[in-house]
Image 1 (cartoon, rainbow, N blue to C red):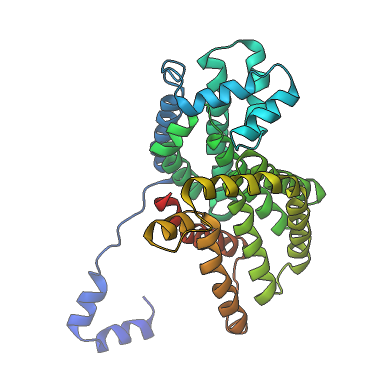
Image 2: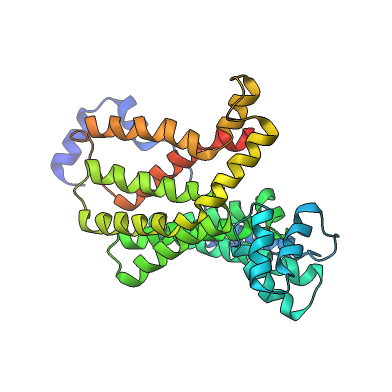
Length: 327
């Protein structure tokens, strides 16, 4: 110990010296290798639960609709059966290719199993890009053991594909924000557009991503060129969704005939039907949020644009949660 330090230590009261030498130790975080082992075990369990006897249960009502459309004798009939079921045709087109190998529960549900497994990996890539390897392990473990995600992975419906496309479009969005080239921009536009052709309600994913890009452009100058390219790709994806407009109008007409949705006087049931659409909750929360951010844009500083993108997406999709619960 140097002489000045020794003199300083003699001037301190004994209690201070004791508190300095006996400061409580902070709890240590788990080693990253142990985290990876625990989370890897959870992911392996999630993979097993998705694969375990997924072919065993008989088809239920909605799965029969998928089988009826996918087994159509030609493409025209397939599209017509999807229209009558008020479903976009993407998942049924994918299922049709798998039915070339056999007509059974195994081949009909196998696409959902594969997309459910792929969604785990793509989600981990998203989180690893922003929060590092440890965050990716945690996210993968939580998603792998999510009961709803496991259910969708064993269901011959479009929901596992929707989860995969949502994760893929988010990963491509992050890569474009980082400055990736045209390949990732095309991947983003394609995956965002395919969401609508898989399930109309999941266009809310694209709506949330548009809100993120518009909000960042309003109050951030960081990587503005990448954000403008993203906004152009989103406009292109919306334009490619235009052929779904007749299907949306047909769904609205049927809902009006069944529930009197557009003609009945407002009551609790009317409000419940209205708010079950995620886009409504999205608009009510996101539009005022963008206005607020624009007014406070000079006070806001972004330290990590990737983390800001994920934060915005989380806020937007949390705003959609009440509608999903009511649905």
